[in-house]
Length: 530
Image (cartoon, rainbow, N blue to C red):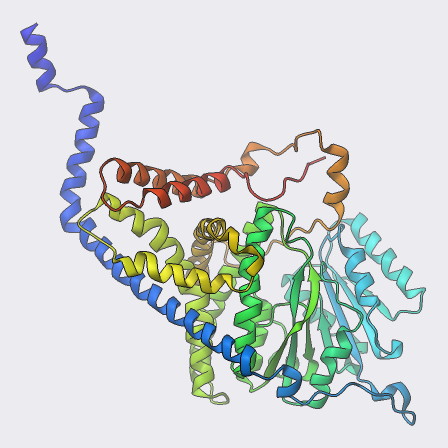
């Protein structure tokens, strides 16, 4: 027995041996490599947090002054309602082109075409152009039939198709502008397939362009018809409301710059042409055009009280694809245009600084990276490396203030703030990955997946199948990156609970649960496959 006992001391069990080897490697690497690297990351992340904090505070101060003392757009610029002229008749009104790009939009094509055809404007001074890139012959037939139905009612509607999808949406819009009848148009209004403008939309936007020759774009706000559909759509509403209530408003009110949202806006066609037209070099063709037009000296107007109804993506798959495009595209565009913006001589130094630093660098790059790297990697890692600490102002105070400033756009959802924080941190993983893909121009940099819209289809399906569980394949629901992040955060939470002194474990456990929920696909709306 003594020999066996002594042998077991000399030759420990396999599991203990492996654990000991990992512990030895950890101790060897910790002091010379891990601790300095983590300290550097803490400094970098704190620097980015301060940048984001200053940006949010600046935005908050400006929006308070705008709301209290600022002038509305129709006071900042000349705005008069369009009036009839008996002598010239309807020719007094400018010719308006309305473009509706769509791709296999079976659930919403009738809504968008119907809303566009319902716009109040002299019938001989408006052209509705449906740009159908659908690949499903059945859907193409339905869309064409809908256009013919409206044409039979006297609506000047054109159904346009092309033999390829080169350039995706940008390619469709560019191709649409080549038709001969477009030459007679002065302005072009663009609505994505799920957008439903009110009949008075053109009456409220066109006067800005008619009476102010320096204005190139009039952008309206989005109104979400399905924001209460599920918790995920409520979270999206909180993020987008800040964008429309604060970011777009500040950019417009300070005569600086704001990005075209790709839809619910009216462009001066001459400004589009002068800026070089639509380009498909990135997945954010709308932002690309807006930046180029701004560099030519054109001004934009944001009309926040003019709202256009549309639909938020309510499935997690659709939302992930959308966020990849919205994060990758701006980073890629920043890489392509930074030098061009710096060298531009037509705009002021203030505008160039605003576009490069505030619009692109802080909002489109820093905001994504710091959210994931700091709160989901660095902060949890300090639990395992107690030699590295994060000051309380960086770990608690700054993120709390930034969160409160972000939440002001949606007061009705303040009670959901904790869920919003956890959800945004989960999505920051996807956005950070997409941002680096855009900056490095690798992998899925030019991937374009049209955001799935459900329209009224889901409402019609659910009651009849309420007793049946949606048939969703496990492979389609599992997201390995989210599951790995959740496992790491859970491990750090357990370690902090057992051995740590930071007391981060409450946050770590909650955040790991959020990652697991997303990783297993239990978020958003479930759509039955049949």
